[in-house]
Image (cartoon, rainbow, N blue to C red):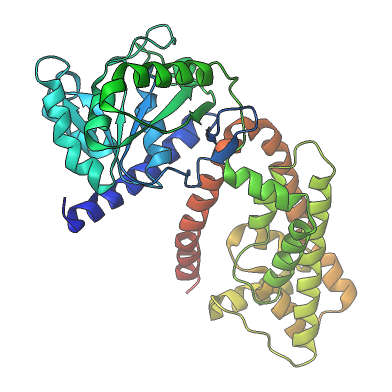
Length: 415
């Protein structure tokens, strides 16, 4: 296999891994891989590359659900290129099924009868080049969730190639999407990596028994419902000084020059804290930062210093001045909905020479908005935690990707 083809397969595997990881994060309680065969196995969240042995490698896993393939792809594909051996009579029934299997899953189709072993040998160059070949040795999905008898093809191929066999027990997919189901239940999935073994040509049956017995033992282990990497990282920050500092400085910066709204980090952090007083502390820190930022801009402009105002337009300043002049108490209420940055209102308050008392009256609306938005996020976080725990990183990524579009539309509207 040439290097160009290998690079293309590696890119495709990574794209599939990210795609299926997003699907898993949305439609399940998350997926965690465990490296090690005991209760102290090292967990790897879905968003992180899972450690794999070097060299030619064949993964043998139990099979009870269509979700098995995508679970393995979403994890292994971040580390190495992956192909899943599939049944040609099932996945190549028509052009649509063939496109789905090869494009979205990345399959290596063989026949379940006749010359299937010879077709499997067609993957030899791929395995030698570094592709991880996933084989469901049972040959079909279990209808009970129990691990059935194994075929020997994976082990014979490993012996011929000098590849190691890595057992991976898949726990949770049968409960989520058993054979015959069309829509997954919201359940957690665990992938438990066993011990990779070399297979000698004279001990095929022994290797089959060793791997199957290890999978049975790993499959008996309880399913651990762990939060995704994004949730873990954000929650740790929320309960540390870093979280308070971020929301305070972000809100303060928005009142002076920062073009991103104060509620963005506040919402991200506050949804993870549960029914803890930390939520109130985060909201208070954000509100204090917002007030201080507005006060700083007002004071600087009133003293003759012009702070930078990136991503604003002259029309924004004109409208803010008109609203402050017409209704001092209501101007900041209008700012809640019109998209004009709060730093623009703070600037015009300084330019108009408003007193500290007048500015304090106007600031009530700004602080109220942060409290309401923060409290709403705090409340929703408690009700939506079961969905956000696996998918918060995805939500964060999508929000950050869409925000520039909203910012551009706002600037265009006020231009």
